Image 1 (cartoon, helix red, strand yellow):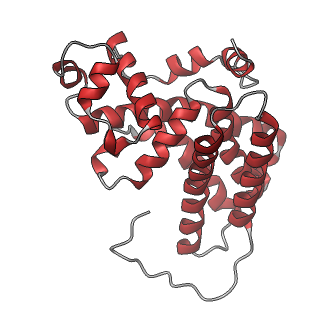
Image 2 (image 1 turned 120 degrees about the vertical axis):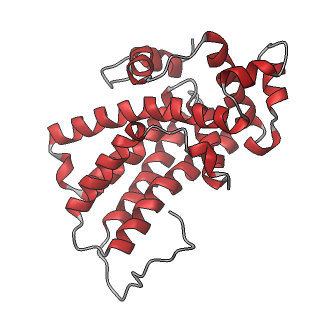
Image 3 (image 1 turned 135 degrees about the horizontal axis):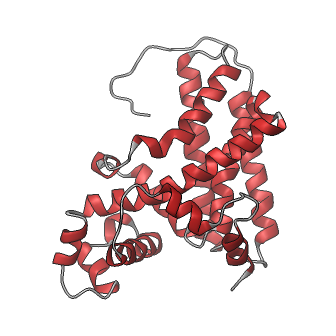
Length: 248
């Protein structure tokens, strides 16, 4: 077992093991077959792309006899992708709350920079310590670009409670920001963190002893850059009018 997996099995300072995180955050019972198909799909999507991997390929790679297995467990390709994402986001949500609880206990929640930095580092640490982290971040980065909104319809709102908590904490700390500016900065904080980490994994592979120091430095720089942008003073005019064609 490599060092990342050892840290993962031990919980790596989160106070909860990976098995406990996954079990405590699950709201639906998945069969072993469904879990194996999701794991297989996640790997294939990360290696190729969401748009270029068919249900048939997933079924074949997971050792199932026919396509009906996928339809039985998920109903559609969009549902499979949506449940794949929801499963991981649910687990990350538990970690995010734990990290925010620790931040509050240490008094770090009084700084917008500190809250934003901690939020980015949650995903960075997931990529580093969770066996599924490198594949997940590449898949979710693709999903954010995907034009099909159906894949996000399988997300239980509760799985986003950590993100909502971060948003509320930041809004309290940054009351002077116009709504449009705050919304755009928060969008950038979340999405650019995902894209940056995914791009690093795409170029360097999973975090291993040989590249762990470089990954740690990149993560700190990325989190620091995005957190500073989130917390920066604002000046100048703002077009705060809603744009019905814009999505965030």
